[in-house]
Image 1 (tube, rainbow, N blue to C red):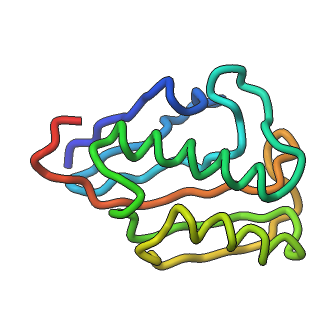
Image 2 (image 1 turned 120 degrees about the vertical axis):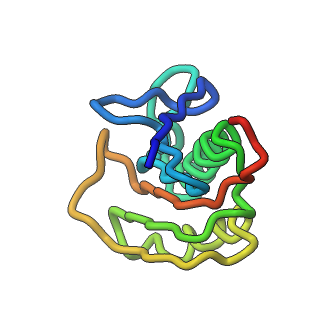
Length: 131
């Protein structure tokens, strides 16, 4: 199976040896997005609500660049630095993932750059798309 790397300047550049996303067949697999501002590369937001909005906007930019949308996300994996942020995170998450994809949400000891949240997704790609 042929894989195609996805890159957009509308989301933060990869900060390591990986791609923002990979297209494999009609599926898009994103790398985890933390709340980095794509223009500055600096962590954006001081609380879970602000950071979750930035993460979702970053994911939206990546899946759009890959020829899909958040409405076509079938699976998310969410990492929180603190489970007490779960309810506030869900409030923001529900605004972006309106189709209610399958999800895992776990707490981890720490996230890159001290982020409070990281999310990765699997989305279905419009097979008619070139992206």
